[in-house]
Length: 324
Image (cartoon, rainbow, N blue to C red; front, side, top):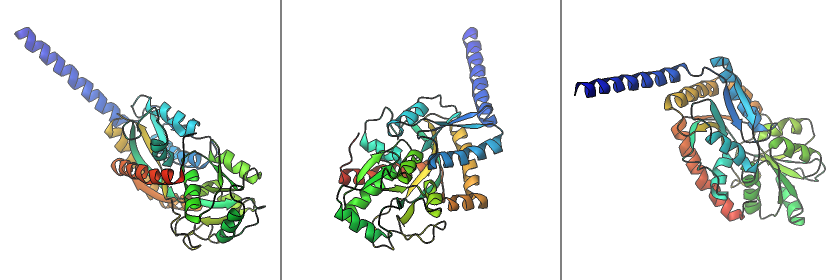
């Protein structure tokens, strides 16, 4: 009996030490570099946003946040790598619209709602329609007229199958009654490069990928989805102004981690992102790139993801989008 009680006290002490050690480790987090997996090719908006977050966390915590681009399979390769990693806070994942659309489009080797711990959103954006300067259009009305005159002949670049750069043109096609063809790329960088080279005729991109090219004349801005013009491109009208208010696809960029990552660590990262998004300098930098500061904590980000799965599923079904 005495031996049994002694053993129970010993086990209790070990458990307390283990719990205390785990809590202390979370409190001291981070104590080593953090890997931030971005499931896209480098050079696009995802790289810009992830570096923006990574540089802030590196500065605040003194531990390097290493951006690890892992493109392929419509973001599935990089996302799977992240969700299969140890849930200790030292692997983060860029999350966004493709996570929601893939949930409908394909049978992924992970469940977006169960295998990913949402942490926070950072920014939101609408999609900017831009064309190669050789295309003889300057307004949305002229673009639609040309597309109707050349059904199926205009190609658009998309940085991910089922992502916002794909869903936005599909929604545009449905609302405007036109037919254009998708050319898929592994990231925003390669997509924009081919657009500027004339291999494709247009794109509906995350603004940060093309604002500079529009300003220097290498691309021509036609319209921004939604109802507001970009401060960085005040001469480019919105779709609503141009008569198509139905074409709006507000999407967001954020941070996640493997499911099971300790809540204390998730809350700590989320709190730093909240501070980052609230900084006047952040607002200015995001605005210059066509982004809107958009913070949500872990729970609200999870709700956004659920809502986007429903919202994007409707576009996917109406547009007849299939897995490649």
